[in-house]
Image (cartoon, rainbow, N blue to C red; front, side, top):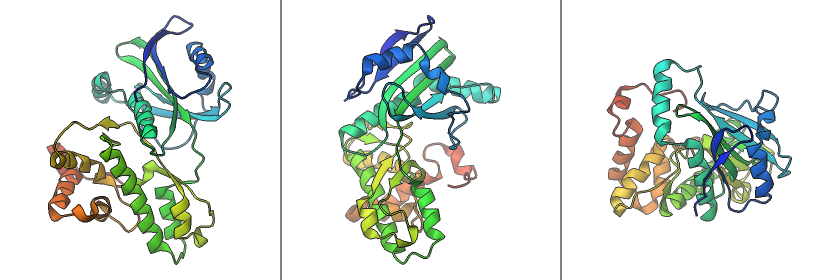
Length: 296
């Protein structure tokens, strides 16, 4: 399932591109809302989320006047806070990769295969000239308390006697979602625990048990690197699929432990070496000698 993208003119005469999710209601009114740039009144500090994102991305949240639901508007642009060489690099890379459209299209694809993720609403761009574009991705806000990173931190600070069973079930959930995406011929790119939100039926961390985790809803986020896998043979496809696992850790489990959950009976030392290759930097030889970032 693919979203159709069309060229539009905003009410001020500016050109742009626009697309809306196939199952969205009130799409005619929403299109006019975008063309009239009504979203501009929400892109200020009053509505901005403080969640950490890359410098080129800003997140805003508000109750949408037409859709009558809480939404998040992700705005991506390359501004002058970057050094000139970094700006030039981003200009070149975004000529060929529109990360917001990847996330928009990716969320539609994941919904179609039954994977819980952000619910896409619309995507559009403002184009002043070739090197001055603003991209927008609007999606429904997920009401979940924790990312898997924050949940793991809470669990480590509490004496929960069910820790082993909880981490095992969470690892199985993460790797099952990742495997489902790969089996459908797609790649999310980075199933890091910070890219999952969890909604728990039991809010008391000390009393959390395996049944709570089993019934919890887990949502995958950050689809900027979503892509369709090329039609390769099974072994070669898995070689590239495992790149997604390079930052996949959880509590007591490192990447190799998560790989065992992911591969199950297919696990072998050969695949462990493939994962090591991707962890070190893959085909980017410069990353092999670069110190790891904090949190990795």
